[in-house]
Amino acid sequence: MELLIPQYALVKLFAAVVAGGLIGSEREYRNKTAGFRTITLICFSACLFTMLSIAIGSNSPDRIAANIVTGIGFLGAGAIFKEGDKVSGLTTAATIWVSAAIGMCIGSGYLGLAAVSTALILAILMILSYVERVIDDLNEMHQYRISCKYSEDMLFKYQRLFTQHGLKAMKGKLSRKGDTFTGSWTVIGKHKKHQDFVTALVRDSDVIDFEF
Image (cartoon, rainbow, N blue to C red):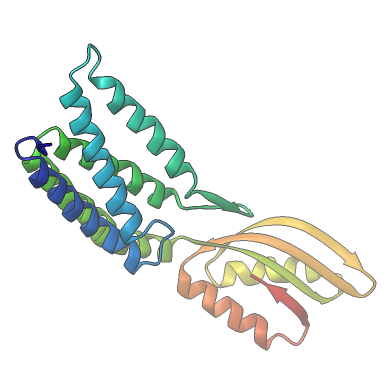
């Protein structure tokens, strides 16, 4: 039995492995849940399904491609998780989605477009992540929970201390138990300002305990 391989099929599959491997390497380097092998397999399988969709040549050749998009959506959702008020994994989920798109692009024969898209994705993941860190450092948010010895002006002491350190604080839950006062604040400001404020808390003899 003769093994028939469509023209350029192996080239497309190899290109999908290379594109997926490049994107997956960046995710692996950052220790993300979907790393080198996962992204490579996603790109490869999307390419293979797309080629099969074209080769089958049914009345609805786009049906398999549409199901790829649906299936990748479920796979990407598995990379998203919530911890408290923080949602993580959105970038990884988006990377899974776009890696499948590149695989479909290669499977359709648009190798040049896939190459440009891969380069742009790597630029977004590698270069723009630095820009994102700079922005986060300028507008970093923390949840502070401070327990201290009770006094009449204690309610305003730390509110003033936030302001003195250039931080914007939004008052949360306040409570008193015996001689201990506990307050929680959502605080926004520069990373360096947060560090200076924590240092001030460590040196404050009235502070019994704090979390951030």
